[in-house]
Picture 1 (cartoon, rainbow, N blue to C red):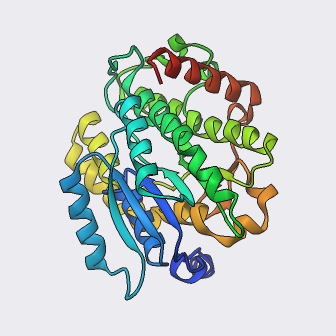
Picture 2 (spheres, rainbow, N blue to C red; picture 1 turned 180 degrees about the vertical axis):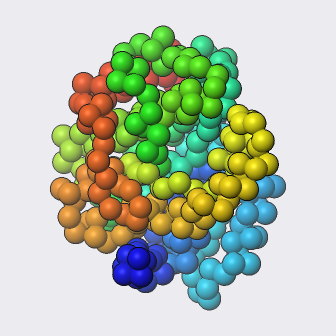
Length: 326
């Protein structure tokens, strides 16, 4: 146990100096996202906190500064981002490109967890919009800036999707992405079925990175795409999901907070994916990789390795995005 802990990835020791580098972390005002930001900023990076609520974000930034970025270290900047609507995601990306001339890594961390089934205004279930379609639009809109940064000498550009081991939850027959109707698979309303619905979107996150990596490789781009499972983490989002889904929520919230990892620990794999030099040293090993704590290569389920499913998801998403005028 002691040896495992001593060799765990430690951002302040194992990340290089990140001065001059720029990162965008979605869902950054709490939980894993907030501590991913802290790990990167402590190494000198400018990190944009993508969040919907400005007052919560500025409060989170004050908390991070109180926890200490260190003298002469990086800075954390609020950036308005709402993933509930792909149009707002696109607008946010366009505004980011006005603010910045480079982007060294995009970390798509924000996600909706285990809530009730809800249909968004464009006829796609809300969880799919928030967890996949809006991050897809955000990523594609920022891609020119990411590619521009990747073209610079000595660059190390990455795109990271925070997925989950929950991608294993839906049955194989539910891993279908070839139509708008498929994306609206309801599952059920029990906590188990809600977690399958969430896992369905987390499978999308992996397939998204697989297909984007394949496309970038055909362009001989140096950008590395990674998906990851952060571990079982006691985040505000997870605790909120328990409150809404289980009997005796207070008991289960207390239990989760005792046995699950802290957000700071849960952010280690995200920080590794975004900035560890090990990844750039072995790009073939890490392109389209799925990481598990703490920065180890994990095993994807068979459906998460399927090129056909990745293409289905990309084409269906692209078609939907075109239908709504994006």
